[in-house]
Image 1 (tube, rainbow, N blue to C red):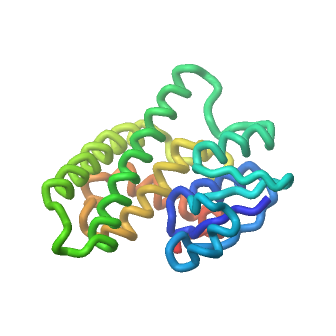
Image 2: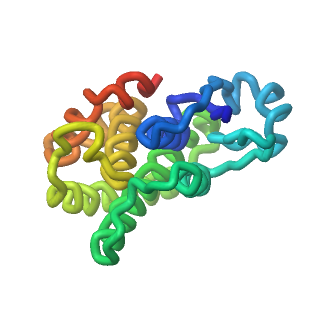
Length: 202
């Protein structure tokens, strides 16, 4: 399988780390939706990262859908099986992805839109949504044990950590680690595991 996209995308990175933890062989191709748009379009005309080119040539997209396929292929899941635990994991993942979406919107607003055309009420709104998502995510992560090794990392923890690393890299100083000690501690621990270190945010 071929995973297409840059690891500075949290969506690409969460997919890559999941594939690694599921012990599924794949090659990673660092193709950018911006700098190498035409190269990406030749692989997937939608130009959406991540894209997964399966062994039979079918192209899948969207990190959550690719992960669903990967877990079916591996015959095991990084999600808990119990209903209550699964509900909590889904809430944590949802909060992490919501926070991530608002970080991405902020980055695009400031990096892609000309300053004269930036709409401050919109920026204030997405930043408020981001703050709420991280506040609630902090509460969820605070109740999660810090994994002793990579085998104990589930999808909720993986996604929360990847999103936190992405946020600190892209919006330095805007989401204070001191106000999110559980996220900071959890992420610092899992980022030391080989699957994370071998596939760094870059």
